[in-house]
Image (tube, rainbow, N blue to C red; front, side):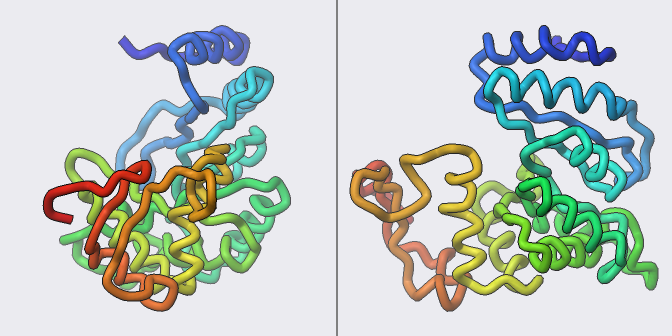
Length: 247
């Protein structure tokens, strides 16, 4: 059974239970199902704010799953530390996207990008002239550009599932999509290495430096100039130990 919460007053006990389970951070879901053509029960803004406050009191960061501009706005109002997904219900260049991105920057919120997810779940769908179609990869890329312009930290992520996008290759695709949306190759590489480590408090990894974990890839090419080089893996080291077998 999965614990649930239906009242803001339950937030402290809910967070204590997650701490007892060993949680490193709290993820809340603010999603009414619109993007995927369904209707889902969703928590109230008051409950989102109460959960965020209780998690912060316990020393936990809070990440919110939100995939529309309205849901992202609710998460920002709640005081979350990060958003899992860009929003996908506004067409590229929409003024509301830029305003929302600026709000995220003002609140020091990071965003996990997941462009590969939106591409994967819409694969095979017949394109339409309506760029405002919920879940559109074009909308997702437009939101990402607004966030980048506002200076919001962008963390590469795929929202990989047992179905799609695929583990491993999904991240390579994500990095490619990030550069297609306007990030430089080095910027995209940073989004998958040192930035996630910094924002999740993982001080022992994410960079190549003395004293840090030696989790390393040797690749054929220069990924700071051509991000596709990260998929041409020649060798792998995990905690300083060279791994055997096919790369």
